[in-house]
Image (cartoon, rainbow, N blue to C red):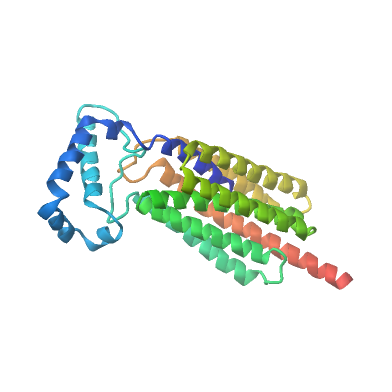
Length: 320
């Protein structure tokens, strides 16, 4: 929900300096990469690299140039530590110890576990809530949108490329917009379906324009930050306002309030920007791990609310 917006804001700040960080600006790093490429990434040396490279690395898209950057990154880190300096960042990121083909192992595993949690709660929701519930299909659609976002988050942390970065950002934005749509259906749409139809068209238009601009014109991190702050605030305020309005009549909305507040609070972990523990676990990975139970709580709220709406609609039908 809103936590994805906060995460996007923080990531945008990191990405804005991704084109140049202290580590990759170092002459020793640049010279190392240049010499490594000249030595290993052409002619017979490149053929040898490709023949000796594990199949899982080539399938994940790791190239000779990528390998040179990785080795030279650690050479530079070693020199920094020997001279008593702080660990530098490279291309906007801390140095991570690669495991198999995973570029950021802890964040990749945590993203995968978030996806697993979402899938399990989707299965539970479909088992517990009849399809006749007014919110059934909207909630199921939200679950699939979330699963897709966590899939691309896993891919992005496994292998950071221009494509995987864009897909991670776009899918996260889609989750926030769908959360706004979910809130609109719950607060307005059950009484005024025409309003929801128009609002859905507006959200789709906004998403299309957002993705088209960032994909076809230029990937503007500043604009992306502002856009996601805006939709994130709408998401937070709308959900909280509805929850506070209905908390006495609907006790289960306390779960939704807890989810919104927890995601905002846990997102502050991203501000604890420190070099990865054991070169694997950084603040971003810890944030991803901490959100797993929060997603379970939110789907539990959706389940309770859908069953309440079903019971309410059945009672109205009997009265009619």
